[in-house]
Amino acid sequence: MKVTLNNFDKAFENRVRLQVMSVLVANESYDFNSLKDLLEVTDGNLASHLKALEKEEYITVIKSFLGRKPNTRYKASPAGITAFKMHLQALENLIKQQKL
Amino acid sequence: MEDKEIYAEISSIRNLMERSTKFISLSGLSGVMAGVYALVGAALAYQILPKGNVLQPLPVSKYPDLFYGSYGPGYWATLDLTLFFIALAVLILSIGTGILLTVRKARKKGLSVVNPSSKALLISGGIPLLTGGLFVLILLGHGYFGIISSACLIFYGLALVAASAHTFGDVKWLGIFEILLGLLALLKPGYGLYIWATGFGVMHILYGTIMHFKYDRESNAK
Image (tube, rainbow over all chains, first blue to last red):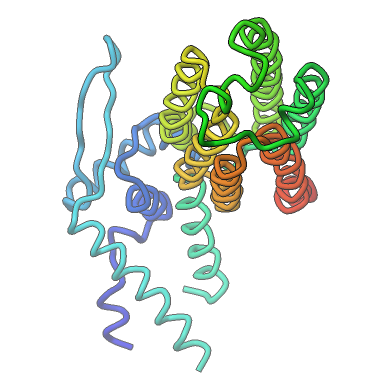
């Protein structure tokens, strides 16, 4: 039981953060606007959660320009992918324990 | 955390991973329509093609015979243009219907049509498709008519297999069948039109119907 709780990642407690991470794990990279459309969240909300994930070093940010428009892309870091997998495992374990 | 919450969390993760990597607004009905256009096109082509040439396999050992039949290059040059416009009409109608129905399906589901997965789909499918299109045009230019239907099927099949990573997995199987048919058309030089009609007509209608009942109906019910 204790192991399970240890693996439970605080950074993923928020739903949006977990959703962002699942999109980034499944894709090579994703840009801000597509992420916003997909998750149906506001600019500010998404930006603050991305900042939090960036602070944990779970994601890396690539800033570039498409013509004159800034285009910010996000990528899951190896640490982020590991953390995401551990978190999923923890969720799975929790289900298994409750079934017993 | 509650049991239910965890299940909801996991299913939302799975849903997002799927939606972010795969373009799922492709319409099954547009496949059926493409198949119908292809069959009509093939029927028109059948009307104007010299019958003996289509029905009987040509001698492979004599290359000019294989490519021109017994009619000679001059006959083919005028026929070639008519066939080309039939093929072009089928292509434009198919793509037009495909785009129209796909946009409609995406709107109905409240999804955007332009997103990273649709772009990935277009790029991965577009490269083999465009290569194939140019390849076929060059073949036409050289007068190699005997292997055109085979080349169409093979390149189209390869494009479907490449694109299938970004949409429904079933598309990969359609691609594999198209490739097999293309190889068969190469083995049986005289039957190109029939095999082409099977690949682009019958297979599209079959797969479009399957896709429609498997995905479109289900999502409409929700």
